[in-house]
Image 1 (cartoon, rainbow, N blue to C red):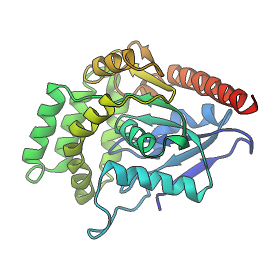
Image 2 (image 1 turned 60 degrees about the horizontal axis):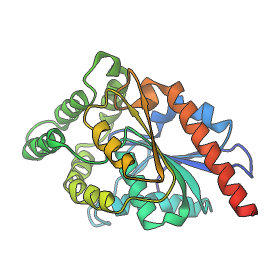
Image 3 (image 1 turned 60 degrees about the vertical axis):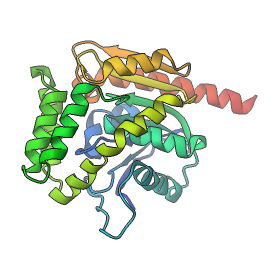
Image 4 (image 1 turned 180 degrees about the vertical axis):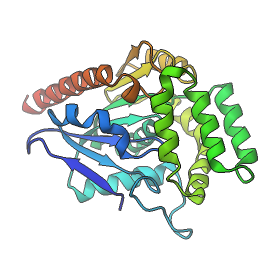
Length: 267
């Protein structure tokens, strides 16, 4: 089972599950825990092979977004959490979308920070470049390249350095397993784009998130259940670079959704 941490607020409070991105771990939420735990019960997981969660043996279930989402659902089942709000960042937003597709009844709402909705030509180019050289170059060279491409500006340094520092804790074999998942991204994102969810969703994106903001904005414009908040002077990892803005927007959204769902249950 995945390694996880919980922060209890009260027995009646809703649960919020935090999903980090590739190369990170649950410590990325260090600017969120205090603010969110004043309102909700929190569950933070380390995805397989990240943080304190073990990787998977060669003979175990193949790495796929379905398998990774199933890992998270296993923790929810273990803790007897029937339904929760989900907060994700970067590749973690894809894990949440996959989980919502598999078991939508478990998802009260979604908050997507630095969401990945579609790979543009730059994303496809760098993913393809990585596939060509992943078995030749040290994996940290590739990770640093991606980090600088996605988070290039000086004001992105804190989030960029965090991801690079945490990725150094991954074993090379684990990095390559996760990198193979990029081959699933394009067909998976096309499927997500064709079937837009009716689960209430808040997207919080940095104005300087040049690779992903345009496609997210287009998707939100076509999704009745989704809203978009754009944070100025901010890049991909809004949860670190503009933590207060993110926390305020996300808590306001999640509190509102919890109240609406409680009213619906009592009606």
